[in-house]
Image 1: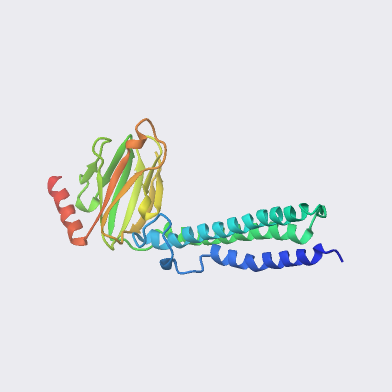
Image 2: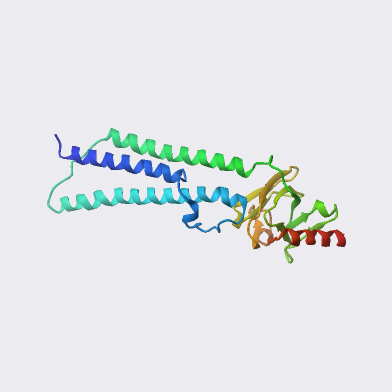
Length: 256
């Protein structure tokens, strides 16, 4: 038997042991609270609570794959260099069926697991059947935003400009349904900290609903290139207590 056969078997066993770990990591089978948010704050919104574990799992799986791939690159380079220094030329192999099957199946399985968990979480994020307590309209305009609060009346509108970006007020712990429209070109309603974005499409109406779970101020912006002043199309999200939110609605009603 060739001296390479035992080594080949050990390699196949190592890959077979690592593969289940990759699938588990990709499937987010861990407590996301014990792991860094990897650039995103935790517990900020109901969307963050759903999607953060997927974000973490994808990065961890990618890291494990990268480390394992680096080892596979460095090991033969170092091993064969040591043999080459002794004047030994490594055996040339045309193909290795077990290894080729493994490096075809493993990436496919990782992508399949990622796709499954992405579809499951996406369905939860875009769910529009659960009851909401508040309604807010969001219209994208070149180049700013207009926020409407129907609870305070049809004229309760807050319109921003590139020079004076508007503030979007949200109540803490109460679900809000957003109606997204555009009166000119495609815009993207994006709140990075909330891990949520949806497009404002001319002639179409999109809906989105979520709950803000942390008091504070968070930046928002358009993430679709919409024209000359796209970079100035920003806004601020201010999450306040339900009492403060009601006071804000009352002030809009009075001013209207």
